[in-house]
Length: 269
Ligand SMILES: C[S@@+](CC[C@H](N)C(=O)[O-])C[C@H]1O[C@@H](n2cnc3c(N)ncnc32)[C@H](O)[C@@H]1O
Image 1 (tube, rainbow, N blue to C red):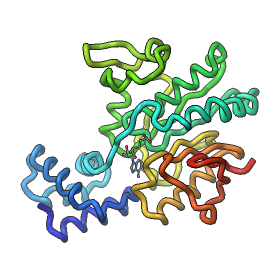
Image 2: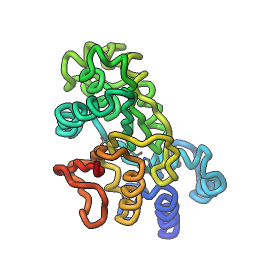
Image 3: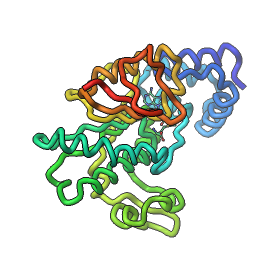
Image 4: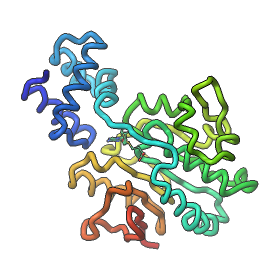
């Protein structure tokens, strides 16, 4: 059981490095760290935290964020967004970018890959035979190395893949065991996975047409959330679309984004 001092040290560390506010999550932090320490043979909190502090890019620091993030996601989650992409955003971008044929789409908290793979399947399906003339690769980033490894491997339980349309399952997945499917290379090659902390300065050279930043800002305090939203605004093309979780919203007075419909926002054209 963590002492008050130990718990506060974790809360301060995670907030200052990753923006995540765990101050009300004492039971979760306790439970997950206890299991982690037991499994990995740490007998003292101090032993672990001093390693984390000494090397914020090191293995212990990576494990800490792997353990403390919540990575729940699924294919076609909040499908209203993918429908809106298909009906409104992609026709608009196909027309607008007809000359360059380069779409820049970012899934900024991609977790185990279900979100960026859903986007990539939609893009390949939407562009059909013309797809090979376009660059529609999706950039997918997350802070957790554990979830990124899972995403790159692309192995999912059959029950997780089953809700997808039959034609997508056939085209993009292969059965590798009685319980599992794996994403085929054709789809894998359409997603670029990178470890990226949303709190860091953005290293991107070009602006995005579409950003999915869903179900991650719920973990950030308001000041952190709106600083991030400002940064994203600067890195979007005029007329670009931002999708946030359907239970999330942006305060009109605190953002330059225009409201389109619940959880969908747009940079001014
Ligand atoms: C609940 S998942 C959301 C997955 C997907 N976007 C969805 O809506 O289904 C939240 C993800 O945000 C990631 N995350 C949390 N803080 C982050 C940060 N500072 N930088 C990058 N990713 C972060 C977590 O590792 C986790 O995988």
